[in-house]
Amino acid sequence: MLKNLLFVPKAGQARIPTFTNMRAPCAEVPNKDSETAFDLKKEYPTVKIIQAAATRRSGRHAVTRRRFLADCALWGGGLAAAVGVPHLGRSAEQVRADDRGATEAAAQNASEAIEKAHHELWRRFIDSRWHTIYNHADLDGTVVLPTAEECRADKPNALSWDISISDGAMFGGLYMEAAVHRSTITGKAEDRDKATRIADGLVKLATVGQTKGFIARGLTADGSAHYALSSNDQTLPWLYGMWRYLRSDIPDEGRRQAVKAEIIEVVEALDSHGWRVPGDRAPFDYFGSFGDFGWNGAPRLLFLLKMAADVTGDGKWEDLYRRMVEEKAPSGKTSRLETCRKGMVSALKTYHTWTACPGVVGLRGLWELENDPALKAAYEEGLRASAAVAAESLSLALEFDNDDRQPFLVDWHAINELWHPQGSVKETLQLARRQLELLDSLSPRRGYEVRLMREPLFAAWVVALCPDPAVVRRHTPAILEAIGRYRWDRLYLSQFFAAESAYYRLQLSGLASSSSSLRSRK
Image (cartoon, rainbow, N blue to C red; front, side, top):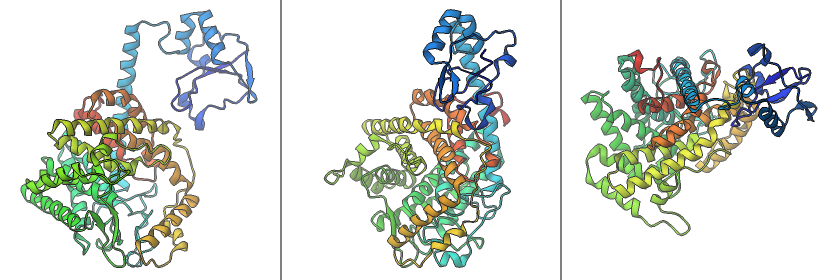
């Protein structure tokens, strides 16, 4: 006699019931997550289990899909309803009502999860002095910062990969959108203040260096020491975040003018450097460029120029923007506009949606600023394409186990065993890659969160950035499910802030409404 009926879907699969014998372990139960299974005898004590012919597979009993469907047909809709097969034996009105209920429950769960995420981000990952965002922290809030001497000696490397202050400009700039949207939704003074603190941190990162156009990645305890190299990935998010803040109603006039001046200085400096990103001290000259016709260049450069025209009202930036749109690509390359139209390249295999995301936010900014119908349509097409490839990563969230206990290396100093003086950007890059490989071997939990937390949550934000409501609506259930998946207080990486970015966009578009929404907490 078959004793239990367990619903145990694999990630991305429909809930197909599987019969198992109690004595045989159910191999599909992921990471002991009891929420994906229930005992039929407990849920429906009066229901008799069908005696079904079982086939042996991998040392356990299972009923094939074909056999199960045949049994359902034989026993009719009553059993199907009892065991929870979706939509069988129910009217269309019942199905719609159940779907609405499921969506509302998911939105409620996500709303509560977002409040916890917001609290956890500000509890552990935002420097209370400089208002910059750390890459990682221990569960008790411990952060291991480099000393000023280590920064000057380029330890562990001049790029600061992959330590606690590697990506402060990138993360602060990207998170600014969430901070501004949260302030819009809640109307609370404390949320306006938080957005301003993030802006202050971004301004500080742009002013500690000696080289115009240089945006520091992060700061040590003294608030001034920093590593020598920035990047395109730091600079574009910095510009995007400053622009979002400037367009909000949060800054007063004095702060607004100061932010505008910082934006103009950075853009003009990048122009003077031929759109290359400068380092801040010898022997490091440049790391990264906006001039590329590919994904890491095209949407970022076009946004930078269009944004500069919007901020300054100076026609020279609009003229340069038009020239860059129309510039003929080198042989074998697509034009910048065509690159934008194609959208983000899939990052599912590399888990790098987080570094592809700056191109998507640039594309979103272009779509908002552009009045030319043909160009606007091209940018929207690129955003739809980006959402489509990002959606491939959403189901990774379902593989995350909140009880995973792999070690995370909070104190990154162990990678200094590979350190050596670096005489060029090339040497730094080679060293940083070797150190990253060592870090991955010493800190398996880091890779786990990269794959199963950072990737799906940044993917959720990329989907939410799409201006086509039908596209976003199609993936909203998966986004809400991903947001509700995590115990934020058990995460070491800070990049779950992307959950806020995605959720607030859903809420502003009316796709994430619940009785306990942020708006209702005003």
